[in-house]
Image (cartoon, rainbow, N blue to C red):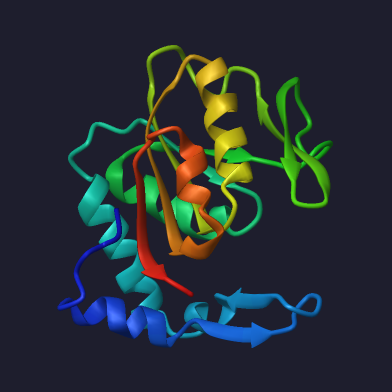
Length: 182
């Protein structure tokens, strides 16, 4: 589901602060640059506020942020709703014992890791990232959390690229996005 608040001026303001950079990092890619959003404190705050408004009464105990841009949005959401923040990292970035989930990318594969014990059986989790494209990373994050015993309530992304159909790979898990980019 999208924010569905086209009449909410915050959505328009947020969208206006996301810069699209053609042919980055390679030809044919329309890169969604959120650094320009981060340079606009009011738009950044509106982004966090919209997520907090959605999740503050959903009894979420874990906000899991996907490296690296999920680390930007996840912690302030977690703090505002009284949840812990769990970083989902690329391989060999966490110092303790970890569990891993490999996933397939368009060209190759990657892996997410989480500290063992970061999530407890039955905890309600929200997965946060900046963008959903093909959905592979979100799927890996959900599998990792579910293997640890968490119930993934929803995934939340600032931006969705609906033409890449990543939402369809989430096996019916709810996805909440603020901005669609075509």
